[in-house]
Length: 69
Image (tube, rainbow, N blue to C red; front, side):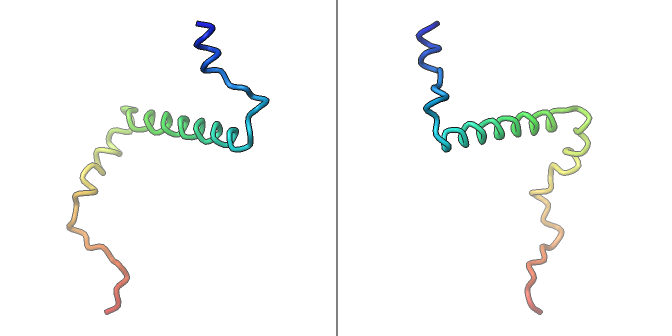
């Protein structure tokens, strides 16, 4: 177990700015994913997502592309 922790450990003193930015962005992305999963799988939000489930396949409403007449 000690060998594994030595392998997975990090040398905080040797970390550069890019290393710290990477750690920050990984933590932000992980937190964001957890927040989205909680929002999507919460039973109280089921009606909201069910009402929009066919939105990508709905082609009845024309899309205004700003074309000149």
